[in-house]
Image 1 (tube, helix red, strand yellow):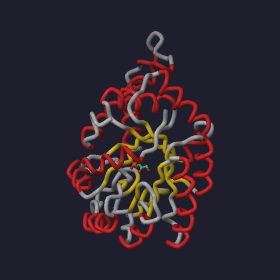
Image 2 (cartoon, rainbow, N blue to C red):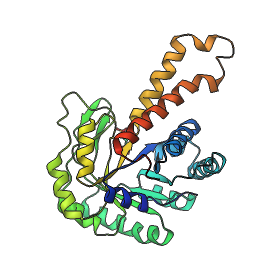
Image 3 (cartoon, rainbow, N blue to C red):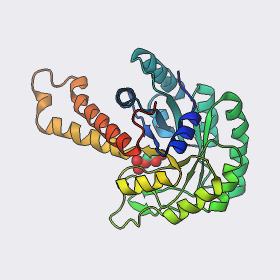
Image 4 (spheres, helix red, strand yellow):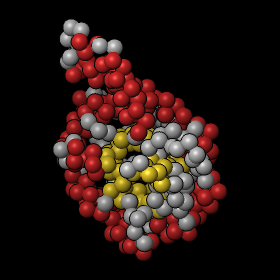
Length: 287
Ligand code: 13P
């Protein structure tokens, strides 16, 4: 059964570790993440962007796939199925489809609009027992080759959104989606500390987990981060492993053309990446 992310994140925040959100792209991704979480007895959050949602044939398909896998693979650790960077419409669609956790990203709206739309989702999620993530301060990222620096959220605005009754809060602290550029200034711990003071015990979310050095991750956790999102790093690990399989000509030998064989090294690479992240986040054995 899918669960809300509320309990796992409150426990993580109190216990000074973080739960990983790993984004899924297909059946293999989902299976590898669930198997690793079960093997390591770690709670886990499966992230679905709206684009990945379309790719996987819609939100109801994804709910069916994940619920089926939990049953067939005998997964007993807490699993939340979470919409990543949702629009208001996307959030409503995922609530209807049976997601157990939602992110509404209103960070690109003026704060009044972000408050209005986030508020409209707080009550629905509360009644249905669905966890809700809100965002203040846009996360930077690479778009058409132009790398935008991550914004730093205004701590007072963070408090305004946290006070609406959301479960967890994503706040920009100089973090960026995708690979970090050579000249990246690092996370702004002054900003994180100020936000943490404002929001009390609310679990904070660190997006752009790919490539953040271990010491920065640990410091962020010590300042209230209880959920860390990882996407690109699994993609890069998968890509490198599948590339090697093909480059070594293994697809040309015997039944090496079988898609299950071609994807197998990529799957092992995803599992290794998830394990490595869970070790750093400190969530192993916390299920
Ligand atoms: P990365 O792709 O940089 O790991 O970021 C993932 C993320 O924050 C998803 O919301």
